[in-house]
Amino acid sequence: MNRNAHISRKTSETEISLDITVDGTGVYDVQTPVPFLNHMLELFSKHGLFDLRIHARGDVEIDFHHTVEDIGICLGQAFKKALGAKEKISRYGEAKVPMDEALTQVSLDISGRAFLVFKAPAMQGKIGDFDLELVEEFFRAFTNNSGITLHINVLSGKNHHHIIESVFKSCARALDNATRIDERKAGIPSTKGIL
Image 1 (cartoon, rainbow, N blue to C red):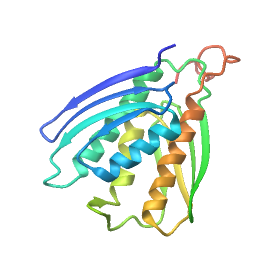
Image 2 (image 1 turned 45 degrees about the vertical axis):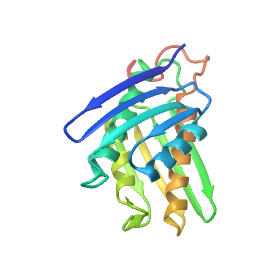
Image 3 (image 1 turned 90 degrees about the vertical axis):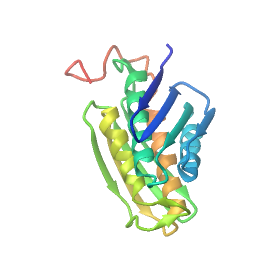
Image 4 (image 1 turned 120 degrees about the vertical axis):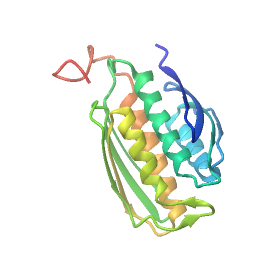
């Protein structure tokens, strides 16, 4: 089974090309004009064992918002496309990952119902040039386009870099768990017969 997808998106604000292989080894090639997001997406790929290629350009002379949001849109669309009918997937995933003083718990359901719960300390200010509020915007775009119910709960943490890193790693590991094939299952893991 080849669970991969290619997504291209071009608007007046951004141009993005993204490839994902769900059953990968964590190989990545991430080139965007947002260095902090590059770092987080590389962690996401490595810890979720997703092969990920993202090449993006955007109107970062204005700010990073459009680029970050549109990459979230493309990543969500790519997961949705790569998983297809979602036959035999585990469906639910959970992970709790520390990063020094920070600890994040992520629970998710590949349900076909987009919903984000994002509980974290106030994300205000910047890391370098990166606006902290864009983390939630990224995951909102991702959930809205993947059809995933995603609960992100930051349980502890003071350093924003550590917090965000634990968020991305937890999300990656939870997605890896939820997308795994369970051969005991026949068809789609829902009494409705569709996800």
